Image 1 (cartoon, helix red, strand yellow):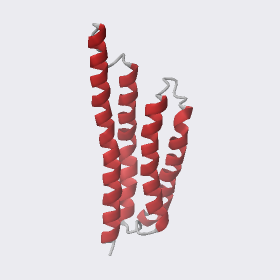
Image 2 (cartoon, rainbow, N blue to C red):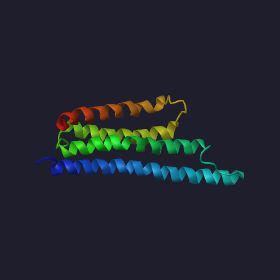
Image 3 (cartoon, rainbow, N blue to C red):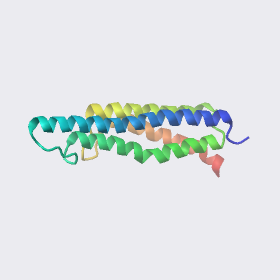
Image 4 (tube, one colour):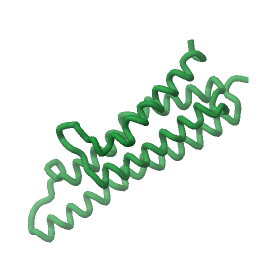
Length: 145
């Protein structure tokens, strides 16, 4: 049977973990905005989310998750549909990717985002995540051709 139940359950578990992290990015936006509003009020100023460095970081974190969601989730569910998530490599690659996304949250909140695009502090999670995506792609592609 294509797409064994265990594969679908594994994909669902990974998806739920990923969506939990993605939901955190929205909570972070709300928290950051609330802090910015309070700070501006205390200083007697008007809060502008578009000039706030903290809001830029929170928005960038959320946007990055959104940018990569279709790629990751598409690959994950493609692997589940062809029945290969019960194998060690694709399942480990999927969970590792989720773990690296959690690390990305920590790193971006700790070190911020540089506007020049050279975010070396984020490379610790970014490049290994790219390799997970590449590995998942190379693993599932033969089953889809």
